[in-house]
Length: 225
Image 1: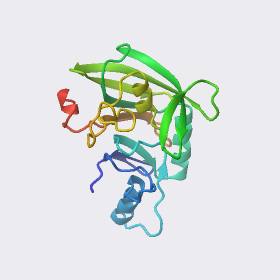
Image 2: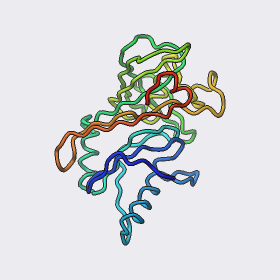
Image 3: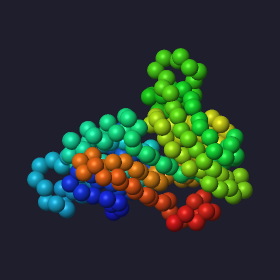
Image 4: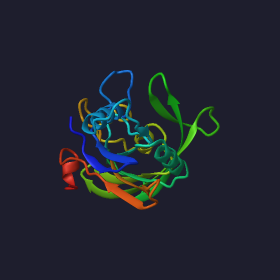
């Protein structure tokens, strides 16, 4: 599998994650992005020994789009710190079913993850181990009962976008976990990591990367590419 590289230097590697590929090794044993990229660098650069590649953030397995890795421990530490300080802007686009409460707004929920079931639910404030989840959204277009929406994360919780949008009555197109009642088995989830913006951890230059989903159902209704 050829993984598109959006940017690379001695410190960073920004790629377009293929859909349905785990970012890191999981219990399925399927090929993961981190391992594939390490193997690519090792072979391409004829590197002896192990290749360092630091995981900075994650995307759910069915989600495609822009993701950044660190090629040095210094870059990994600084990027992780930027993420904690919310100095990394992450924009996603999604196609949801139904209409959101407003054309532009903010969603705040308390989320609790069931690790055994790998499923997240919205709970009341004060529940043990629950974490606050915040996102901002903006409607970009509509086609029948489908809505194209831009999402910016303030927090990075597991399954956050999928759970929060489903909670307000707008499950993602193709999402079997949080929208099984309105999606058919086999449909690809319509969530894409569209843009990343952050300061280079070493050069201190502003960086901005974009990635667009393929012109397939349901993305093709809006001609994004």
